Structure formats: C-alpha cells, structure tokens
Length: 117
Length: 117
Image (cartoon, rainbow over all chains, first blue to last red; front, side, top):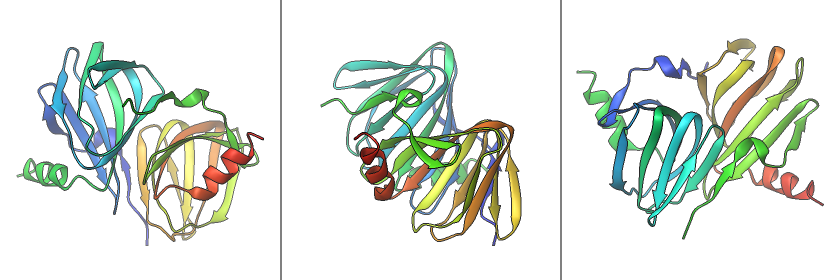
C-alpha cells in the first residue's frame, strides 16, 4: 500500500470566502488546507467545533480573536481550540497559509467535491 | 482568552535523529512539528500509531514506504496512516518539513520537555 502523496499547490482549489481559496488534503482524522488570500481578502467572523492549527508560509495573515488582531508573518503558527470565534485578514501582498483541522472538516469535503461537478 | 501564537522556527528544538531536529507546537488533539534535516541526515525505519500528515517547505525529503522511495519537493504533501512503517532521507541541501500528528505525540512532548532541563 502506498499512501497519498500530492503536490498540494496543484490540488483543485475551492472558495472559502471572496478572494480566499483552499486546496485540501484529507486524512482520516485530520486534514491540511493550503489557503491563498488575494491581497485585501478577508474571512468573516465564524467558529467551528474543529480544532485548528496553522502556520503562515508567505505574506501576512492576521487572526482576530476576542477583538484582538494577531498579525502573523512567515513561520508564525497558532492553535485555535474548537469553538473559538475568529476572523482573518491579510496584508497588501496577500498570504499563503497552511491550516490543519482536527477532525476532518466534512463541510469542506462536501464543498470541495461539489465544486468538481 | 487568547490562544497560542508562536514563531515556530524560533521554538526550542529537540533531536529526532542525528542531524534532524523538531520544533513542536502542541494542540489538544493534534500537533505541528517543524523538522529541519541537515544535508545527508536520515530517519531510520519506524512506525507509530499516530496519523501523520505533512508538507515539504524547502529542499527535498524522501519518504520510504514498503521499500518505495517518494522524493518530495516544496509543496509536496502526504498522509501516512497510523502504523505504517516509514523511513526518511533528504537531499544534498537538507530539508525543511512541517509534520502534523494526530493525536499529539506524547513521547515527543516528554522528550521536548526533558531537553529543557
């Protein structure tokens, strides 16, 4: 048996918000999601029961939690416990971010599969 | 409540194998581990019950599964189900890799905390 190996930045993208796309890789109980923010794009305030970890790979992503904006540059990482409301914005050059969710976001899988149709 | 935000490449490193170090960020049920391979370093064949996902950020990391070597460059990602034996080697320039484990590797936490002493 050979496990999945994929070029993540070539995976088909789905839309997370206007100007924000994700390229997912689904494991059994966790997943990766490579997020591209176009310059000026934002993710509105939301929450999910899934634990979220992540790291900024390029540019700047700000995560806003309880009204406090954390502006994160390359190699800055985070843990958002499940249920914590957060929003996000990026810098003038956009951002490339790797998100991790546990468990798998089945809502993302459904949306990603639906966009293939 | 503000969740953890850390500059992952500045986290104290612990040794994974000769020439291979990790910089961990522990969540509740998953963790990140930023791995640096020095040129020529290898990780011997091993397995663990934890699911492992990851992505190569710089250089080349090869993952060997069932005798097949998968040489992975920047942005190439993988899922290794729990219990799958694997080894790893890197290219002549070493590699920078982000690994994800589910659940948390408590053995890593113990080793990371022990190296602080």
